[in-house]
Length: 267
Image 1 (cartoon, one colour):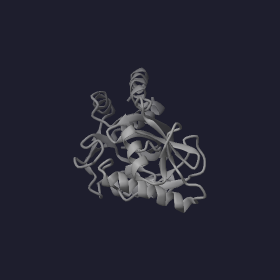
Image 2 (cartoon, helix red, strand yellow; image 1 turned 60 degrees about the vertical axis):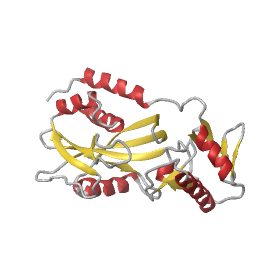
Image 3 (cartoon, helix red, strand yellow; image 1 turned 135 degrees about the horizontal axis):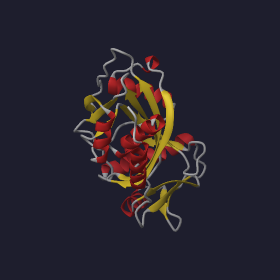
Image 4 (cartoon, rainbow, N blue to C red; image 1 turned 60 degrees about the horizontal axis):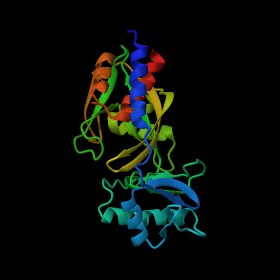
């Protein structure tokens, strides 16, 4: 099937414009060890400055005061802040998953933090998504469970999830492939695609995320099945049907962009 490259590019441009938005006016830069790490709402910043003894709110922004702290100390400091935010009802969907915290400018990780706190503090996250193709060119897509805290009921890539602290992207992909689709990554030989980058306000705060795209052709007889309860349905769809659904905003924004990344490489 020949893909309409102009349609794909126009749809990608439209979605990229929605995926690249600055923090809302008045949001406050967050600092750790002299490095900018995120952006928080005035409500979150004022709360931490008042309730967390090692936070100060000044002209530069919200600063975690950590003079002389090592990596473990910084992890403990951010853990305390995350628990305070949770207990105050300022973040939701606690996951008991640690993600890396790095400077916005890039570099060595400074600490780890509970996943649920990342968007409340505008801390960048890294994820992996995989497009799963049938041998005939159709695409496997997954509907997110209705009880998911983020984007419930929307359509998604076959596999997708966060890269946890101390995990490589391939390790994260293997874990998510098993949990979300019952797949053994060693049998799939996934190919790396491009990167999808998002920065935009969301209900939970400010989302800053980079997604490494992978593509894989599922072998004959392979039928993906969810194992962790986070996927309500998996369907095999023709590409035109997928594009129509993306245009109707039935897919999450990142899943739509990940899908288009793959299709543009095939057009």
